[in-house]
Image (cartoon, rainbow, N blue to C red; front, side, top):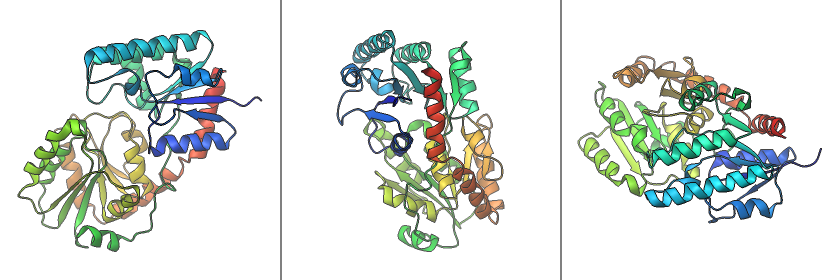
Length: 358
């Protein structure tokens, strides 16, 4: 068999999902190319043709290629994106799309976003979702008729990616948290759709002095007012630690090992690498039963709630306090589940998708 060449678009620096998938595809014999640093996600045709002619263009997030904060610029980007895809289609490059979300999280220029998504669905030779629930949502949202080109390839784990040596005691010492406290953690990029202000309000309804909420993560400049809102909400509450800013990869183990349970108060979610991260660190989770979260997590490792229940998150957090004795076992259960999602398997499943197109 000739070596298969796949080109990944867009390049997302420092993204362990992309790095691990590329690394493992190369290990099983594929040639995987990626954009040069700082090169354009919009004008990708020269990069693709430089490798005359690759077998696969593997699209991940569509927004960098076709959406901008400016409406006119979005129009230009979308037109350029679609013309380039059409030319690649004509010359026989196969198109694979991995669906990470159904629209951009900022709800910018949704008409163009939907137009690009619908065209990619039409042009794609294969479409990958991370779970059955995400596939169902995709089919329903975009009324997909040709289901034979849809594939499920799970999200891989982070078991070997991040350092995980620090003890619970040392991690808590570093964050100035008492050993006796039950710690809820929100970790990662803080965006409006992730529901952090609601998480704070819910936490403040819990009874107990011996509880702590740790919120750690970066807030993008376009969401700057979110920082003020969070600081207002926590002003008088000594039980909440808010640590804004980028988290160095080597610090992730500190937050994870200091926590008892990791909370995902997302209002809107299709798939989440952050859940796989928590599972890889052996943590119990609180999450809505939506998208892939309700499929990857189960009742043995998570307190799942329905988004339609306005007290769902509160009930789940109260359950955590009631079941504090079993939290450790729940985390171990999640770690065993995460171990099944090895990147070697994910790469082999991705290769099967490629072969189905060729």
